Amino acid sequence: MRAECKYFESRSYPTGETVRKCDLDLAPEAPWRCPENCSSFEPRLADVNWAHGSLITPETPAEPASLGNDSSIGDLLDAAEEIVNAVAQQTRAEVDAERARAARGGLRSKLSKWFRKG
Image (cartoon, rainbow, N blue to C red; front, side, top):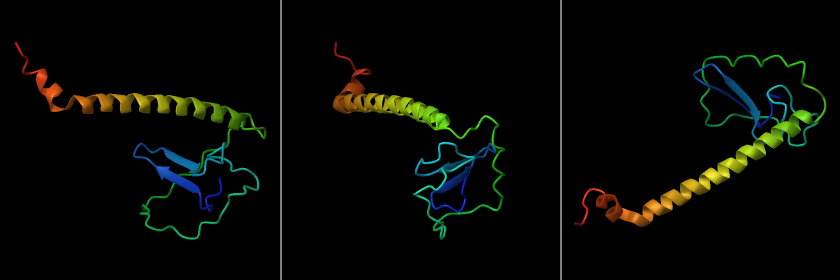
């Protein structure tokens, strides 16, 4: 990955894991490679408003031998992303519907389970 690209992002987590990615989602073989001659590459000029830690980001893991030059990896990751996005949209719709039902009920429905007529 081109760490000097404006769209490169590296993030470390308390567990020690580090994520390296392209913010434009143009590097299907991240964290190992960016596309050759990426048309969106822009050099990073400055980091503004970011807090940099004192620790050094760990090295990028070695590129696996199975990483090829064909588009199969990108195609597989695109298919997986479509599945996740479909589930996320469905889940979001369910949560929105649940919130709408709760909002319609208001205080009366919340109190009715404690104070019943009768």
